[in-house]
Length: 318
Image (cartoon, rainbow, N blue to C red):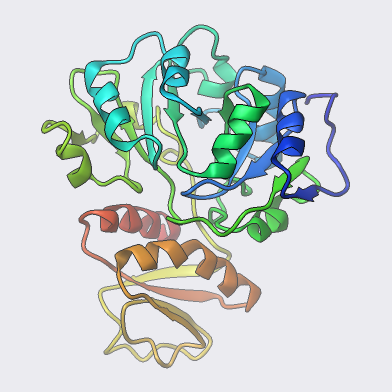
C-alpha cells in the first residue's frame, strides 16, 4: 500500500483535470472516463501506485493492466519493439478502443504487467482521458474502475457506487460512448491474434492486416486483461435466449434485447447491436437497484460488435 495516499473516507468528485493529474503524479488513484468504460488510473511506472489499484479493485495479481498513452511515442517507449503491423494498427485505430500487447520495455514494472514480459498499451479516444495523461506527465495504467468481477462502469456514478472510499479521485465526465471494453490484440508473434473482442472488430482489423485471427491459445489469453477471471457479472442470474417474443417472462424478471419481453418487470429494447452493447452494463446495474434477480438477454449474431457483446453476455451468464 502506498503510504502517500492511504484509503480515504470519501472519494473526491471533480471535473477539474488538473486536480486529477496532480493526484496521479503524486501516486494516487483516479477514476476517469474513456470512450469504452471508466478506468481506474495510476502511474504505470510507480509500483506502489499500481499495487493500490489491485487492492482497491480486489483484482487478482495475475490479471495485467492496460497502460494508457497520449501519443504513438508513448507506445514505442513502453515496448522493446513494435512490429510493422502494430504500427499499421496504430495508424488506423489510435486513438480508439484497441489495445496492443507488445514486448515489455524493462522500465515497465512487473506489477503493471502481472509478471509478464509483455505490456498492454492503448491510446484512448476521449478528451478528458488524453488531457489527464498529458497533464500528469506519466503513463497511466488503468483497468475498469469497478470492483473485480462486477459489471464495468459506464458512468461516474457506477464508479462511486463500487469504489467510494477506496480511491482518491473520480474525474466526472459523461457516460461512455461504447459501453464495452477495448479489443486486445497480441502483437508479439508473426501475425496479430485477437485475445479479447471489443470496440474494434475482427472485420475492421482484417482491412489492415489480412492474417488477423482470433486466438484459441490459453497461454496467449493470459496476456490480456478480462480473459482469465470472473468478469461482468451482476448480482442476478443472467440467462441468454435466442429471442423472447415467444417467451412468457416472469413479472419479476428483466429483459434486454431487440424485441419481446413485454411481461418482464424491467426491459430495454435496443435499436441495434451498438445500442445494446452501449446499455448492457448500465442495464445490469439498474436491475440490481430494482432488486431484480433474473435477467434475460437476447443473443446476437457473433459478427462485428456482436462478437464482443456475446463475449460479455457469455461471461456474465457463466
